[in-house]
Image (tube, rainbow, N blue to C red):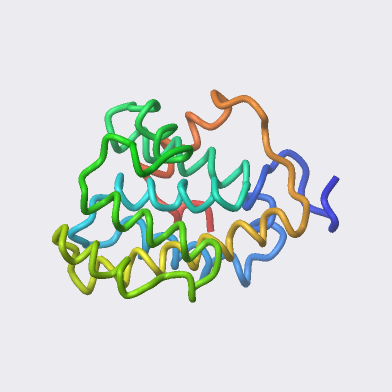
Length: 179
């Protein structure tokens, strides 16, 4: 049961967005910019980062919903999403994305865990300043989203298939439709 009285039937952040429309808009706008705006990283790659950080933070709702959105962007490749969630160093992604995911994972532990060597590795794999910036900001934002969702004890469906429709909606319609 949630720590506050949330609208019934809305899992995870959806209940929180409905509860607080004044914070829903900027939170949704941030997710839209981070995950769907113009970037050299694809929306699928950015959703993989969001699901990776959410997995590190043990946030079932965010891990599952962003994993479903990533899978939709990646042609339904749920195996790739699962690999990034559990073992990104061996997931079948580009070396550049692997290095950026390593940085995102360190941000999930704490920003000061990111080292000059981590950045040098990402740069050696072709990461730009913008991609480094975005990797860190996506990770930092998802730490906030994860703590918001879990800190107020929102509910989340346990079954992975419960997230497929929401993942498709996020991938197609974006984050402002929910605000």
